Length: 306
Image (cartoon, rainbow, N blue to C red):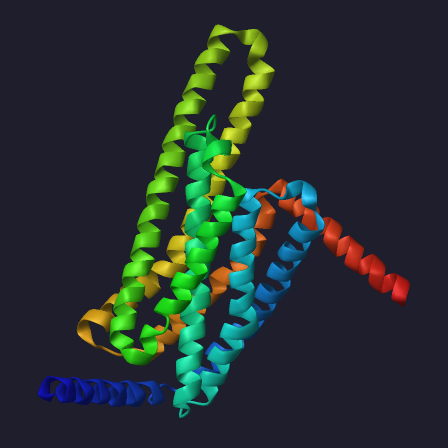
């Protein structure tokens, strides 16, 4: 009983310290941070809504990979549609503990699913490159849907730790981010090495059989494009989530509250949800074509109504 009472007192003192540090942030910084979140939020909502609509309206591009992308788009849409408005409200209304709890739980859940979906996509790309002959049997639609459902359930259940013990939740979130980043790092390194190996093979074939130069050159260009894609995706993952991992580890292990730095980190994580649809539409031609068709269809429908 004494241990439990001591734990409650320690937790209460930590929450008091957190609230003091949280409220001590400059008002100008809070306003600037909220203003920065508004365009990021709008881009996230519009971009991910277009991606979802394009995939739903284009049955020809539906595949296990696109189902993973749908999961990413839904989670990123929740970030822009729910998590960011709550975060902005929590920044402006600092005394509401319920708003703080709800904002933190939904933010962690939506961003956690987004990161897990990106990780799942990196695994999918690794399997497609490394085991291209067995890819269809390894990556099935039913299997992908089951994994996505488990990811969503697991992430939302884990967000409940924020109510029980905020610092334990931060530590678990840091471990969660670390696992996802490690898996993505492994997958993208293996993709790069495999692409480089295939490129060397193609160059050797070009020297041996000059008549197949055109076909091999096309394959090499495709491999180069895949390598660039994987590097860009990985670069943005690291840039957006590594700062969050560092601060979450500090919060979880040291019981330190860096309110200003944490708010900046959250904004950077939210930026990933607005970058994802732009990045994937830019680098994936079939998705880009579907999104352009969807935009033209929406504009045509509005013109007909006018």
